[in-house]
Image (cartoon, rainbow, N blue to C red; front, side, top):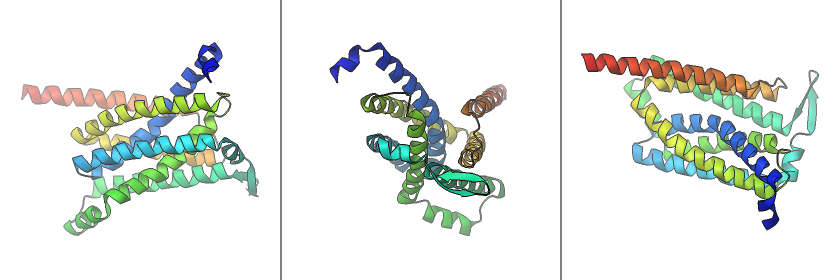
Length: 241
């Protein structure tokens, strides 16, 4: 174990894998930041901590069962000339869930709520309900993350260390993003659009059409830049008035 610390190749794979896990964790951060804003501030913080802790646990458990994870990529059946594995089915289910969740949230933002609908939403947006949704997405993103990581590092210990560092970064970033969305409601629509984009990419990946994540993150980065400019412009207008 100690000899790994003196191997430059191990450190190179650790740094590469850590960066990759942080990048792949962006999807998870966006979802958690949006969904916990339906809870009161104190409950939202608890949900954020528990959600990211579960993400860490799922990733470590999946790494321990690495052989089983590799088996998820084996073909199960063929439909209309397209083969499907367990990984494909998991990505399809997760992508469809994100599409449904983001569409429902956008509909709510545009249509508004009656008193009856608001009461119903508050009754269903319980702590356990939110954590349940985070668990579903954590599982989807964990499987995708670990499957992608296989081959980048030869040692499970290195993979676990990279995952721990990545989740710590996710924890720090999610708090800032969640608070930013809470203070700037217009950014929630932008985050929901990101979830739609991520959902489409997961469904496409599950159907065998891989969309490079770089394209998705570039679009997200550009949109964030435009929204940041809008926020600064609105802030200057308020200061002048």
